[in-house]
Image (tube, rainbow, N blue to C red; front, side, top):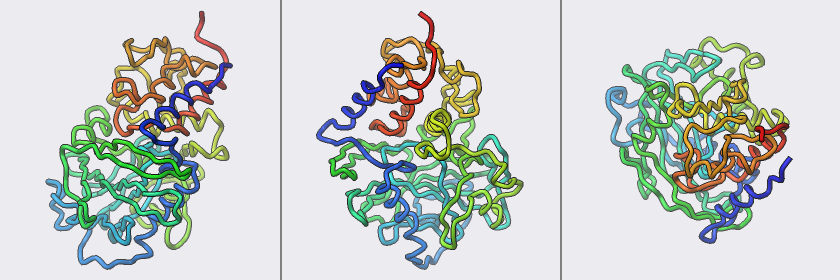
Length: 389
């Protein structure tokens, strides 16, 4: 097996540019400081208990056209520095989520009263018309603090309508009192201090309407990405105690048809060795970060590289698979994955890059996920064999 250090060194160098130190901690990350901050940001609403003179969904007009202001949904607001979910909005998390420049994230789902999502064990749950999925993104000012100040940047909504799912982005106003619908998105210069005391500076992308559709595209149709059974099959610390998310959603009546969690599919937690082997966790990471495009119906279907963790054809998920098109994005490499040789693999080359024409994923990050890259690198290094002469 080859040494794995060179690509990691490249990634560290990329994250350390412009005086920035290597990053530590993120949504779903293994850094305890980051997880503490995210938990506090998510749980603050339940502690704050701020009354809201509004009803989730407002007058219901959002199923025909998005509201111009986030407050009109009564779905999420900023209370005491944290994201407060509206009444009846159920918080949730994922086993292995998408990396988003180490952003703090708070997720929630609201299903209209009397309605419910339908379970399936393969794709995203089928949500009824009127359902609102929400995810807020922010950055802590200093991850060394016990209670850092979080600058909330955006809240994204995926809404189930009669004409299908629609995805929208709302950018928080400077005073944090409301967020405004944005079709064009923006690039936000963001600076913060990581848990090691390093200064981090990056250009965070708030996606445009078109970019949202690009990632959420499945066979030409906008589709939720995260809320799949295998991602939701995990425990969550609700205000009244810990419970499996699938079981909780079933118990409160917003999900129908789910089996017992013990027999439902489950992705490993990418950075928790107790949940899966190195290979299983690396494959889970690639699904969470790449498979929304790299699947048979996704935006990247023409590549023939399909990265769902359930994909069992080794060539299809990259082993000794030549790229469909050569060029700068390959870095002169011949195969997506070369067993035992991560430095010769296109996959790790692209994960370690921040060059727009090279980097993967192309949307959703501006810096390298050092920990995620290390996981995939270690997995490729552990593989036996090679790709011929």
